[in-house]
Image 1 (cartoon, rainbow, N blue to C red):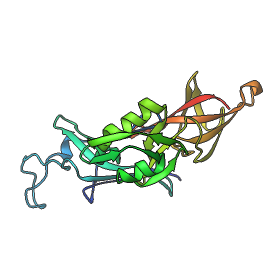
Image 2: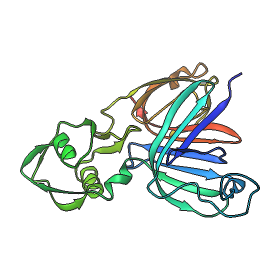
Image 3: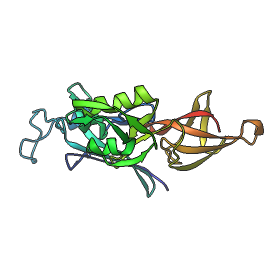
Image 4: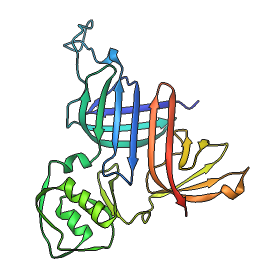
Length: 252
């Protein structure tokens, strides 16, 4: 029997109990984010790690702590998110808001002297590891001790690029729809719960991520078959199970 499982580490510490996890990744957003809700009963812990609960609130996360979220159906573990704690909302249930590698770019600055440079070289000068970059040449692209986050915002706004990070922390700055990271296959009535104008709602499996190509088959309405580019994925995991909402571009 296959069982839904989660492994969530914050600051190297494995969270033993969670109420819900939400992960949102998109090629349209510079940063991906995750929200981890922790049950109220887990917010209180013994002061020394043993004995009865003392009722002293313990925050299981510190701002800036490293975060890793893995989910699985059976033994098929997937890394859904890597990043950092951006803030902690002290309500009950406690909510830990996380951001991917984009978080680090907010506190880094860079100076660029202009001239002519390849986009990939500019990203490297920002201290970023490049996963994929458009072959564009930038002319007189200048920055004076500017936050790297602002440089990425300019690249997206001024040149119409999709700029985002993958779960390993590599940055991508590509022409919209130009990069493919793999393929996922869907069949209506089998592994798709519902379909609307902009996308699909599925179970945790099959795994899907932005930039993958979705091959959709509909045995009842074959004219709806097609291949689409995945622009975003929202994954929710909790006591009620797991669902993915997959946003699709126009048919390819």
